[in-house]
Structure formats: structure tokens, C-alpha cells
Picture (cartoon, protein in one colour):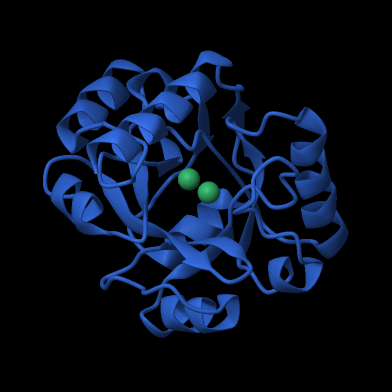
Length: 209
Ligand SMILES: [Zn+2]
Ligand SMILES: [Zn+2]
């Protein structure tokens, strides 16, 4: 089954994607499951898990940058990266560092020390603008022998499924880790227009609020 493990919904500030739209678009593109990883929110993930194979995730804003928890049962509040990782693991979840070393994103974890504590490194993110930054993430994971994942980081329907991993099972974190090892994957960058859409969404929200 093809899994896009990094997808946002309208509960992330600069996305307007409804969970039901994600299910529809994913099915159409041959994506069998997603992880919903909204910024500091798990409500859409829980909602979608009732109608589509979904891993409940959250992209948490830590003091060191974004940290993703997968297989969560409870919301993880913003905190230091170490505390966030502890809270993810204390509920049996997996720690993923998304888009590490992304030089154009202020929310990227840049600390190798923090990255080395993750269970999984996102070595390709469709929204990373400088391809070299994805290469840095991949080189880091290889050098430390850390498990690798990819993700679309979709904030619009256009992006859902642009990156995926082929996994046998996502039933438990253990199954997930086991099938991630050597999994085939697709890495396609998002068209530049998505960054413009994000900027417009951010500007629109500023006007509305
Ligand atoms: Zn992020
Ligand atoms: Zn994200």
C-alpha cells in the first residue's frame, strides 16, 4: 500500500484541505493511507481515521523546530524538542524529523544532535525548495544509519501523494518500522505555485483575523 505520511488539513493555518477531500484525492491517486500531521492539532487526523486508513500524527512546534509524532492517541503540546520527543514516545508514538536542514524554512530542525535522537528522518520533502537541502537530510540519515521516510507535506489537494512510501502494514508502529525498511518510494517535488498559494493563505488569514 502506498502511504503519504505527511499531509495537512484546514486545521493547519495555511491549508484549506478538508479531511474528506484528502480521502477522495488519495483514493484517486492510488494512495492507500495517509498520516495527517497538522501543526499542533490532531483533530482532523482522528476524524479522517474513521473513514480512510489514517495514521494519527501531529507536527509539533518545538523550540528546535518541527517534530512529527506518528501513532498518537493524544495531542502533544508545544515544548522543547526533548520534551516533545518524550511525550510522543510515552504514548507509544514514533518520532520523525521532517525537512531537517531546510535552509529556507525557519521551522526546520538544524541540530544534528536533535535529529540523531529521532526514530525516522524525512529525507525527501516535496516542499523543500533547494534540492540540496533534501540531499543533506539523506546524507545525514545514511551516515547515522537512521530509518528514512519521504513526505509530500501537502497543504493543497494538488500535492497529496506527490511523495509516498510503499508499506505492507501500518497497523502498529512496529509494523510501520518493519515495512519502512527498504520500502520503495516516490519523491516528486511540488510545483512552485504551491508556495505562492501558501503565501496567499497566510496573507488572507492575517486580513481575516
Ligand atoms: Zn514543517
Ligand atoms: Zn508539514
